[in-house]
Length: 386
Ligand SMILES: *Cc1c(COP(=O)(O)O)cnc(C)c1O
Ligand SMILES: [Zn+2]
Image 1 (cartoon, helix red, strand yellow):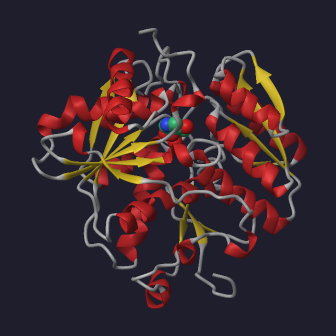
Image 2 (cartoon, rainbow, N blue to C red; image 1 turned 180 degrees about the vertical axis):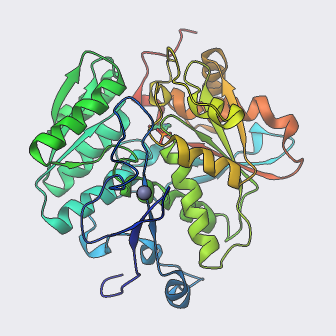
């Protein structure tokens, strides 16, 4: 997209105030000012574009999706993100046209590569030499990997309890890994503190608006791999709610440039013990997930950072919420592996568990996409013995 001004700017999702994309911004200076660590983020920034101009330039037969990128592709790191398989999973359903979008083939093994990729691109544009982030595991292994490709230093705050494979990825990629004897919430707070003290670029999910923009690219791929049709339903595993908001943003962008005329219905799947987003959508009242004990570590979140945007994505798409237990996740992991050859980590298997639970209420013969967010080899310790 070099030399093409797509009009990208940040816009506060709450008050609408705009901020230039040529500067680093996290939360809205008004709505995010009183945000307290340990509560869902307020004033999360969206990225908007000059959609009329983009629709004029976009080749609809071989689209260059970087026209819808907040960072010029001139700065993209040399790292093979995305272009993940979109597979017809015939043997998993008699009732629906079921497809799997398998994000486990990203280089670090999860969809998080998409978010890290764009934040690293911004660092390359602005000349930042270090990036800090908090993570349940995958965001950090993705950041460490993309940073290695870009020769940038990654500083990572992560709960010491993160699965070993993820910790190994970070360490071997050369990141500065700071294990926190506490929860993901504590790691989040520590990384924000780090940025306040040292001014380091912060990749925390949804705190940095480009994490949402990076994740939205999965929607462009689904749309294109689906022969430029919208699926009817997309089932998305939800922790902080950034993947869900990203998937929604991708389809909203497609709607804005006029290539689709409706949005797919989005389904939020959460773990029983980590259900703060779903409860908020269902009741309109927020409270933390009291004690997230799920073994699906990537969706084990007490205080979802991107609560409000995730809730909007469900409301605006007439979406659904569903909650699954670990006793449903592990059999779903096995079933998907045995019937498709796709091995998903526990959090990523939640979309299969959700499908099994929900299939009787989904429109018969409709097209359903399971977003399978990460690779099974990421976490084998948690899998129960046969
Ligand atoms: C991060 C992650 C999720 C949840 O994404 P959020 O943006 O936190 O909702 C789901 N699955 C996998 C494999 C992940 O790494
Ligand atoms: Zn605002």
